Image 1 (spheres, rainbow, N blue to C red):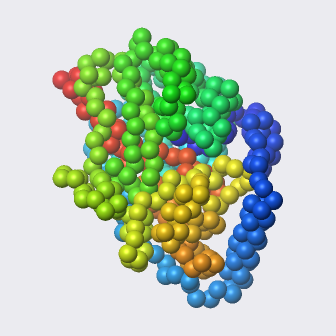
Image 2: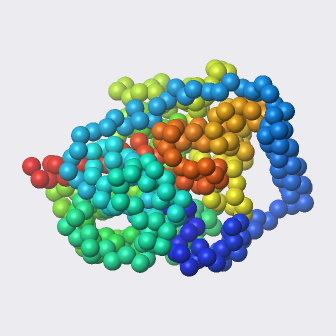
Image 3: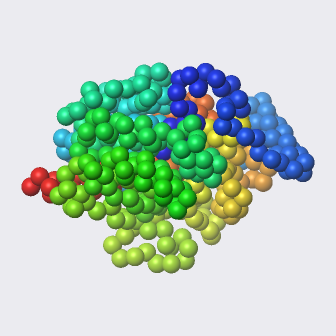
Amino acid sequence: MNDAGWTTSVGSQKRRSARGTDAPWYHARQLTDAERESFRLTTLAAQDAKRRAENGECVQPKHPVNVPRLDPLKLMPKKRGNGLRTLSLFSGGGGMDLGFDRAGYLHIASYEILSVAGDTLRRARPSWTVHSGSDGDVKQVDWRAYRGKVDVLHGGPPCQPFSQAGRRNGAADERDLIPELVRAVKLSEPPVFVCENVTGLATKRFSEYIQKNIYEPLSSTYEISMFTLEAADFGVPQKRRRVFFVGFRNKNAALSFHPPKPTYSAAHLDGGGTPAGLKPTMGTREALGLADIGIDGLAPTIRSGFTGPRHTTSVLNSVSAQRAWEALQIWPNGVALDRDRASQYVTKNGHFRLSVPDCLVLQGFPADWPVGQTVYAALGLIGNSVAPPMAYHLAASIQVALSKASS
């Protein structure tokens, strides 16, 4: 998914305040007086806890500084270079870029309008060509310059036009940039394209949209497959299901392509057995190196810190997610910048407080992926990214198909 989702052009960026509430698509949540008072008290309590922590009043950590048991890089062992070149649109925090990189692809360029995302990619991979800010605005690029220079074009346009949180206005939403990815494909003519988004796009509500905006403009040139992937099926300890569209110009390659099969299973976390040939996906607590409390499970889908009316440091996205976090005894609000600060910032209920590195691990990124020094921006980049191990296995499947077609 796109880096920030809600940012579509430099012009629209300038129209919005730092809080984002003057955007034309924004509608405030309708809260009851009781809900508003509850949120107010929660905010005040969190502010007080943070103040006490910063003043050194919490001398002893509430919990030890954790050492994760999961190393996401082991979920995507680095492959030898395969000579295939990638062009990345809506690069965000780099989930798709990292997955293809680990799978042996050669990075040609990334385009991302958010400067904070561009800075992350440059810090992570100084050798990469990264266009961000006004230079990363996909609406302004003449993609013909990449003809014959790219093998796979991939991107996750903003998901908000198709998600419940984004009000599902589809083409009527100014953040709908799928047509821009299609324009890039038509002009650059890559052998393969990949488009990723939330599963809401694959529902009946948007079947006409898909036909009009993806299949009609591209199906005369590309053989297109649509399928969904679940991050936990590739070892990521989080519930995160996404839809992919993969198109091949070569029909033989398309016939040879198969979506990646699961390499892991989370069935054991629900009391089932791990299917033969698959490894067990770690639960959230195990992945983060937390004590065994007799219960574990996948993390709820991590929310982007860019959503909502203010710069949130919460990863909570629903009431059901709140219940899941509570069962795991993990506090999803007030994520800390690092693990040392998390251990000092005491939660009211004593639950483990998440840090940015913890959220990276739960998303399938290495814990040191350089998402910056602002928590809400870091969570924005993490929560809007494709889980890298999922992209890695998709990249491997594409390579197999291209190899078979050329042999």
